[in-house]
Length: 273
Image 1 (cartoon, helix red, strand yellow):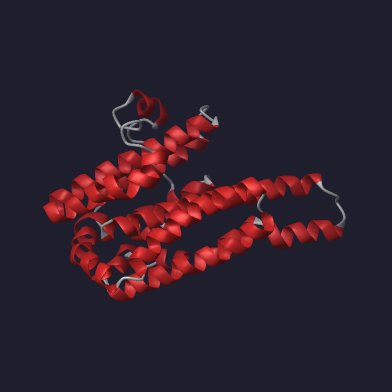
Image 2 (cartoon, one colour):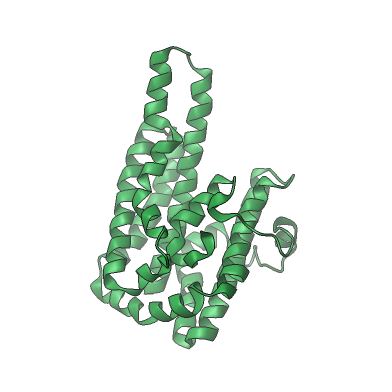
């Protein structure tokens, strides 16, 4: 697995963990309303399993996303080290939350995502040589792709608009949501890969190719396979919002869009702000 692959897959597996934890919080709040209304029970549920407890897990990553150019963090060794430490903090915090608040099935799903995320991040974060190889390509990728208006408008905003679309459509079944998120992600990866190749050359393009074929041959190949969720497929034609749809990013009323905007800033530049 190449260096660029490890950074990017880590980010999106983390988002899967975020989404799962958010669902756990929603479920706990619904259950809390059905339990006894005694002050003691209300306070216990509020303190231990409120959605705000999840947000606390991501405070370090949120701080990084507020930089003027959040993607710059992947251009230096010091920046990569900060990102790796933030991922460690998220994992440990989420473990505690899931242990207290999740159902057995939710814990099983969390463990599945966490195993993939931890393995991917450790392979990158614990290998200085791997980081150095990545740093050969990352300055060009950030400066000539991630921080451009074209990338923001054509790649990132269209992905976030697809996620936002879930709140503004009658397609509300789990299958519909699955199709929309996967089609939006496939659209983003094709759009970004093409721009990296054009701006930074074949080696950088190959890094993105490897990211799609190898990294997501495991995770993305199972969850959002590109042959099923091709941007030109009938599935995506139904699932994606119309051309020109805009996302509100962090101001969106869709919690998943907010999480993606905040915690993937180092991949999206200022687009998600």
